[in-house]
Length: 143
Image (tube, rainbow, N blue to C red):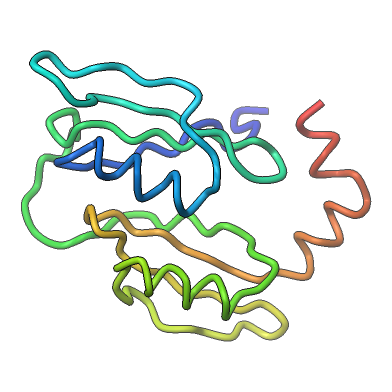
């Protein structure tokens, strides 16, 4: 199998230290790895979060290979959340702006926001994710 699962989501920030503080508050955990920036501050930080302890890395925008100015874009990584409305409200209260409005897809609901650092963050409530988790298929992928 070529693609075996989500490994690390890299996101960018002009101020990694501020982004780490914001994501620490959102995720409720401290980064497990940080790399200092020459001259002070942070150049890179990694968190583990979620049922599969997925890695979210925040890197200084100077490492962004696209280096394209302008608005957010590209792929949207959606994270399953148990309380969709409360999670969306919390993200917005923390300064995230709507990118894609709440969209129902049958029993699945999605939305995406732009964090204060210009990265797209998608959320979804997906009964299939919960079924897979309950069946041990998500947990088995970790083991």
